[in-house]
Length: 268
Image 1 (cartoon, rainbow, N blue to C red):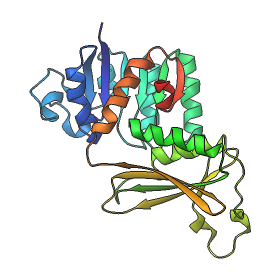
Image 2: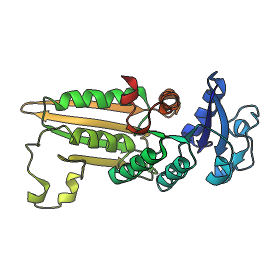
Image 3: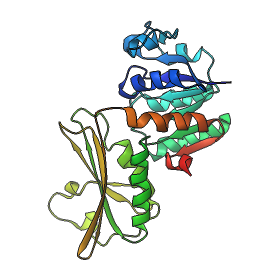
C-alpha cells in the first residue's frame, strides 16, 4: 500500500518540486496539501502540473482531517514546531525540512514522538551532498581541533544560522576537541564579531552571511599549524537536490519511532 503524504508548504520552493516527484512514485501518494496562499486550488495545478484531485487546505487542522501516514513540513521557522507537535498528536509520522529549530525544540519534539509512538526525521538539509559535507567534517574533527563554520544564504532568508550550519555545528560540538583560539570571553573590541557559539559541550563558532547572489552555502573551516582545510557545500537555484533525500526520509520514518536527526542516519 502506498505511503500517504500530507505536504505542508505545497507551493513553496521545495514543496513545488515534491508534488511531481510524489506523483511519479509508485509507492507514494499525495493525500493532502497545505498552502494558505493557494487554498482551494488543486495541488497539481498549483505546482504547474495537470490537476491531481488534491485540494489545497487553508489550515493544518483541515489538512489533517484527510487520512495520511506521514506529514512533510516545508513551511516557516516560526510555525514548524507547532505543526510537528500537532501532527504527532494526530497520529502521523513527520519529516521536517523546515529550518529554524534548536536543541530545546528538538528535545520537546523527541518527547512528543516517544509519547505518540511515532517517528520524526529532521534534517538541516536533505541534499545528499550536504549530508556528505557533514560526514567529511566529522571525520576531519577527529584530527583537527580548530573548526568554525561560515553560513551563506540569500538576503531574505528568515532564520539564522541555516539549518545546515546549525545541525553541523551541533554535531561537531558533541565530538570536537577544545579549540586553541583565545576564548571569546577574553577578547577585547567587539567580541560579537567572532560569531555565535553553537552546540554543546564544546561549541563551534558560526558566522552567517545574508546577501544577494547566495542561495545556500555552508563551509566548515579547519585550521592547524601551517595548514588549513575547507569543506564546503553550495546549493544552486533549484530545489531538486532536496527531493530525493526528503522522499528517502518519508520511506524510512515509519519504521523509526522517536526522533532521528540528520539524513546521514538514513544513509548507513
